Length: 207
Image 1 (tube, one colour):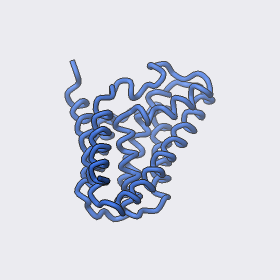
Image 2 (cartoon, one colour):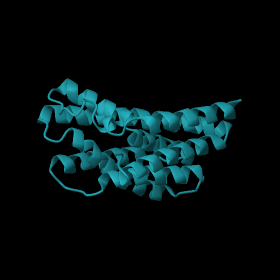
Image 3 (cartoon, one colour):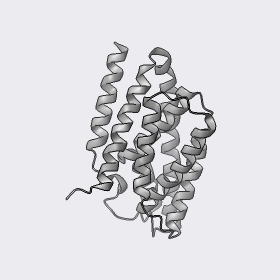
């Protein structure tokens, strides 16, 4: 019964994530730059949730921490790198193919989880730090050009929501792993689907 429910959750998750519009995923405010602290924090909270690639990666981060027994400082490394990525974009740095790297990071994390590879903690830390920078750079697109107040609020929202998601998934996946070793691997397969779909969408844009 538990395994059946896990499969349903994985299938529903991949369906909802891959059908979400990737264009709107990066602009909660409909393309408008947040101009107040309230708009900034709402945009920061919403961006990772409605972005299928970002949300899938956060789920992967949580599963890696929970199943792999990683330290809870691992999400902190991701968040620090993410903030650096946002800062780089806001500062005007031009990083080609950042969205491709974001999609590839989702696919790679999904593969590692789906195959249940025993990745060392140091390797996960490197993966999440590098990926965090590029995810942050992508986040910076929707706040580029904003005033300092909404920019700071945006970062607060980003850090808060991603911390909650990653830590919650870490504890949940640890419980699921104890009950069924296949559960997290199925979710990893769903993450692969999200990463592959977004990657193809980046390589072959919709007409």
